[in-house]
Length: 428
Image (cartoon, rainbow, N blue to C red; front, side, top):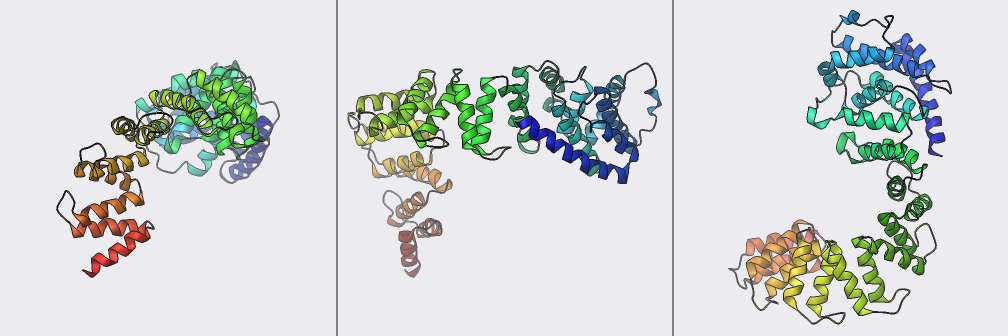
């Protein structure tokens, strides 16, 4: 279990921190001993957090801390909260956002459950304090942080062992971009929620294991989590479970079970599942080929916005496949829908349609526009076509310099044809 792994990791971090603390602050070293025992007392955790906050304030030349006395009737928790409130602006400049949130979270606890998870956060605070405390920290805006919401989530997740709060906390740490993205924290909270049969957490944790985010890539674990969530009716988990059966990832290929779960996901609105069912019926994978069913599923998927379905549906009309009449204008419509979502092949095909006049109207400028969109996304064939357009000068004035530029870019991308034409133009 992840909890056992986390407990082991915490013990190793405590030993490392004790050595570090002894060289910098023996008082800290003594307090770290308080969290080394199996049962962690909340008062001990608060003492450590309180000491960190005091240390930060002293470094900011805030030496009039006598307004708060631990020996007064106030609890240590109240002392920490008072410090945080009294010196909020200074602390915001001294503490990075994730650590600031941890301090508020831990300081606001009223009782302690899931102590392994709390200790993990406390160790993050201590490690930052000893290693990075003197670094310049970028101040953050009030709008960036709604710590009241996060504190409430944390308290529910820890004290009430609320699976939904645990999932939301995991989702919070997975959704923050850049510096504050903390997949290991997400895994921790998703694991707790998943162990309580929270389907959303099982699905999210399955994605982490499948992609190797915050954990080692593990298809078997991903499969088990997707299956658990799918059996609870989670549509996206059902789709991913079907994908694993379909591709034989972490489980032997099974087209019958793949189709079963794709159908379930499609019935519950998963566009990707609709698209894959289209492939299954078009290619006859585990079923008899059925062009009508394939086209129906592609259309449903395209209509709800799935980009690959929009592109494929455009190709169906452009080529007149799957029992559909050839209709360039309808193909153009679906390619444009896909292009709005930055589908590179749709960019290229739109360039080809307009530059060749397949709609009955040739529009070189539109062709150039779409080829450039594809070229900017790295499409070497689009670069080659742009070279052809400027080299031949059909519909526009011939431009050797532009032709050389685009042939050069296509050649750099590996086009042998472009390399030959480039040498010919340079020799003119």
